[in-house]
Image (cartoon, rainbow over the protein chains, first blue to last red):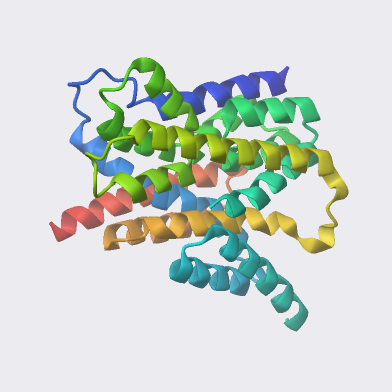
Length: 95
Length: 211
C-alpha cells in the first residue's frame, strides 16, 4: 500500500513540476524572483545528488575528481562514467 | 548522449529491484515517473522504511529542476496546442533539455522545434526504458565487485557540469555540495532539501552582491 501511494505521489509531483509552466495560459508572467531562483536549481540539486557519494575519504574522492575533469573537458556523459569507474578501480587498487 | 543514459538506466533498474520493489511495479514507476535520480533515491528510502510523504518530498526536491526546464521551454512552446505542451512536459529530461537548448537557444525562430523535441525526447525515453528494463531483469546479477552503483553519481557529475557556466551557478553548486555534506546526519535524505535551499539562496545572494 505504501509502495503504491509512494508511486502515485512521485508520478503526480514529477509531472506537475514538468508541466507547471507549460500549461500556464500565455500572458501570465513568471514572477521575477521565482525565475531567478529557478536558475540555480539544476546546479544546486544536481550537485547535492552526487556530492555525498564523492566527498568521502576513500577512492571515490579521487575518482570523482577525475570524472569532474573529464566532464569539464569533454562534456560527454558516457566518457565521464567510464573514466570515473576506471579511476575508482585504479585508486582502490593503489590506495 | 544515449550512451550516457544507458548505464544510468541499468543501475536504476538494478537499484529498484535490489530495494525490494517488485519488477512490474519498478517498470511501471519508470514509465510513470521517468526520472532516474528520484527513483534511485526513492528505492533507497523505501528499503529503509521511510514514510511515503518523505519519499514524495525528496522526489519533489530532486525533480525541482524540471520546473526550471518547464519555465525555459515555455519560451519555445507557449503557443503550441495543449496536447503538444503536455507531450513536451512528459518528455522533459536533463539531456533532452540540453539537446533542445544546444539546437535552439541561439536560433529560437527556427522551424521544427516541436518535432525536434519530440524526436529527441522519444529516442531518449525508449533508450531509458530499455535500459531500466535491462537493469530490472539483471537484478542482482551484476557482480558487486564491479561497483557499478558509482555510475549514478558519475552520471550526475556529467549532467551538472554544463550548468556551471557562470560564477553565481558555481557558487550555488559549491554551497549545495557543502550543505549536503554538513547535514548528512539528517534522516531520510533531508540533507538534499537543505542543500537545495542553501544553493539557491547562495546563488541569489551572490548575484545581488555583484549587481
